[in-house]
Amino acid sequence: MAKIRLTQQMNASSSAIGRPCAQTIQQLKHLDHTISRQRPAFEKLLVGPMMIFGEMITGGHYLEVLRLGKQMTTGRTSGPSYLCLHRSFVSETGLFGAVYRGFLPWGLLQCLKGVPVLFVQNETMYQLRSRASWSQRSAEKFSGFLGGAAQAVCVCPLQKIKVSVVACPTMNLLTPLQATQRVIKTYGVGSLYDGIIPMMMRRS
Image 1 (cartoon, rainbow, N blue to C red):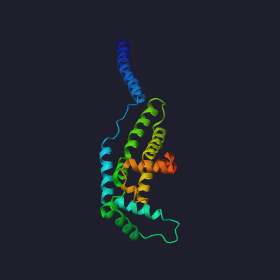
Image 2 (image 1 turned 120 degrees about the vertical axis):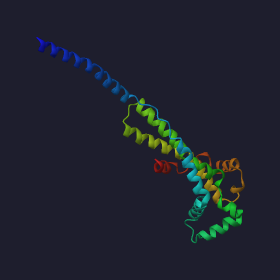
Image 3 (image 1 turned 90 degrees about the vertical axis):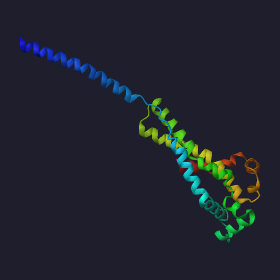
Image 4 (image 1 turned 180 degrees about the horizontal axis):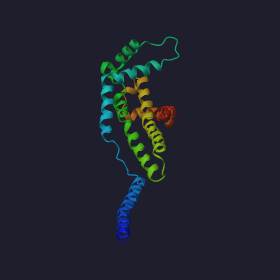
């Protein structure tokens, strides 16, 4: 009889211990299915643009200007050398104007090109996982694509106007609003997004 009572007590103790364990397991499962909204990495809003800004003001922007100038002469029988392009830019706007040709505000705004990626990617990831129950891997891929597309939508018009400023010295003398109006009047609103599909594919 004593052995039977001892066995019953042990079974009762096991059941009492098992109930909290089962509840804990259920709570963990519930937490696993609850997707919390992660904050964007706000530190990247400062570090990323500052790194791009530093690279651009120390010669990166002017190298891009020279590249654009060279590419716009492709197909001619005798394209100008980089030295000739440099002399041409300096003669038109002076040394400072040549080095920072098209930098304000178009090049400067491009320093913020990571901002739309950061917010669109984080928000899309949250919505897909919490509302559509997508897997982590699928949500990461699709949100990355949308983040790159958002970046292309923001950057493409800036690059279009910057190219126009580099190509035409008179555009460089206009205010940002006047330069934008000139491009839209000459080529149409749709021209601001010329080449957006390849850009979206590249950035996604």
